[in-house]
Length: 318
Image (cartoon, rainbow, N blue to C red; front, side, top):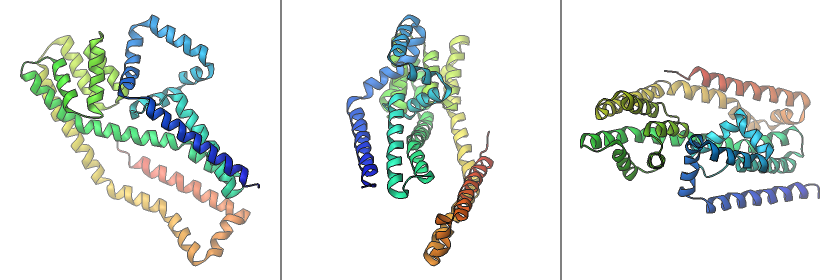
């Protein structure tokens, strides 16, 4: 009976989480996401409309508004946008809360409560953040791989006598997610009156790519000073390819060190599993004896610090 209540809570919360995710995926599409991406740029140019929207949000929920104004709230909202998901910050926080409660129920089933139950709940709660980070990195990587070819297409369009807006339309037609929809957002913003340099700056908030920043600066300089934009974009495509080649070379040169760090970090776990098969009585002391549990917690903490230190040492800034 003592294990039935946490199990029932775990199942109910898991069903509620699945229901929320399915309802969100069925009720949103690319058009709604396009309007959501266009809102920040239009809001800053139309202060009255943005003020009305902001006041209505404050009246609806003081806590979420205050949380959004904090640095973690803005980081979460920006990460969701950069990951390309159709979720709001409130929905992500709700999912994290449900996962935390599910983790508590699962921890009570497995460990009977205590610190291990809290660790399981915290691990499940931060899973959406890790998922957002992985999606963001994959999306930025895919965008960076498409960018040089898009620049070549824009250069060819400009050399053929078309305008920059027409070149962007060709890019939207030829490229898929994530580059095509992002440039489509730029085109839609320019159609409602936003200049192209400003629209590209707004695009940088959704795709924080350094190579895209070079394109934004090039278009802005060409608009103010005037020059051959086709030549600038062609040269920019060569620079982007050179930078990507340099990144690949750096990853190849640091592959052995990264693998060695991963191996050293996972080696204690592998040794503990081997001893659990060969000498189970040695490992049981780490989970049942108070001194053994202290040693185990200290070892886990030191192992995590070592992994983070190795990762920081192998991070090359250029």
